[in-house]
Image (cartoon, rainbow, N blue to C red; front, side, top):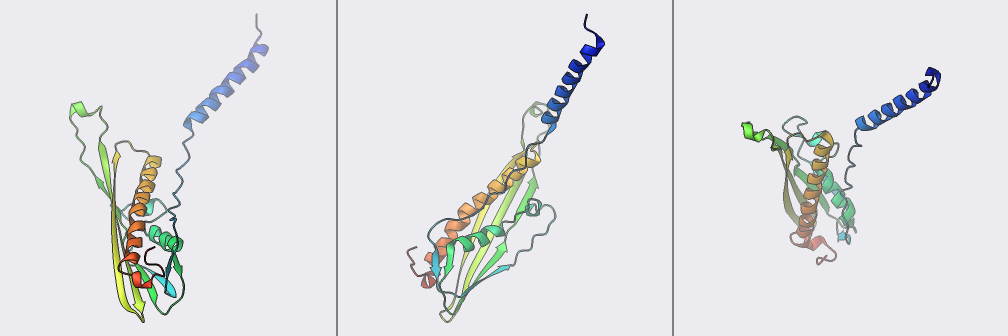
Length: 201
């Protein structure tokens, strides 16, 4: 016969094990890490003395806009691109990079409430993003500008978790970056080629 005194340590061990298992099961996964949104490639050497950023778009910080919820705004893509790809080699002129639009808007989609659709996961939200950028040169060589607009779309299903929303937002930013980067490079090859040391890039 096992005495109560011998049984007590075993019960304490089992209780501790159950507590640890419950704690592990309830620990939420770590939040997603923001993408670096950096750009690689040979520097674009431009004959200007300075670059100025103007954010003409001011995020409303209220629904249906959601870009303020995730700690990084689409405009950061353009700043990173200029930092990573442009190399100023001197000159008398100046570049102005204006963020005309950088919205991410959420639309709640209608959900089918019929009996047969209760077991099916349906799209619940749609995110539409726009990044609209104008690059303008002003200087002794005159005035010239180029403009780039990129769009990205994401659809989220019912029951999407906060981490999944964050992942979707970061994926949307990467999509925008993949479109805006090449498009800005094209503007320097075409409309602003007179500023570039090697217009062929």
